[in-house]
Amino acid sequence: MRFDESDLLQDLLIFDVQRDGQDVHVDLYGGRDNVCGSVRFTFPDATDRRRNLTQLREWQRAGVPVALLAYGDTITLLSERALLDRCLQGT
Image 1 (cartoon, rainbow, N blue to C red):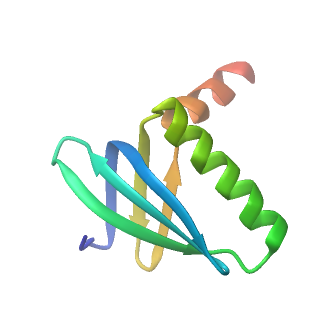
Image 2: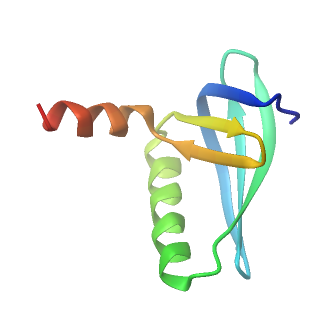
């Protein structure tokens, strides 16, 4: 996948999540543009890595759509549904 300075891809599903040392590889597919690709995240902190692996695998098992936000060299995966739920709980 190639990104411009700021990109948002929505309604992606997680096909697979694998750990390789400090790296976590996430295979994604779907969305409006029928995206298919992989993203590698590096988590040097073991606790942070376990927490993120658990969250990603939960989203994968539950079929939760995720959004991929790319800005420069930074890529973030998030569940817009979970984000919206947290915002609504705070009101």
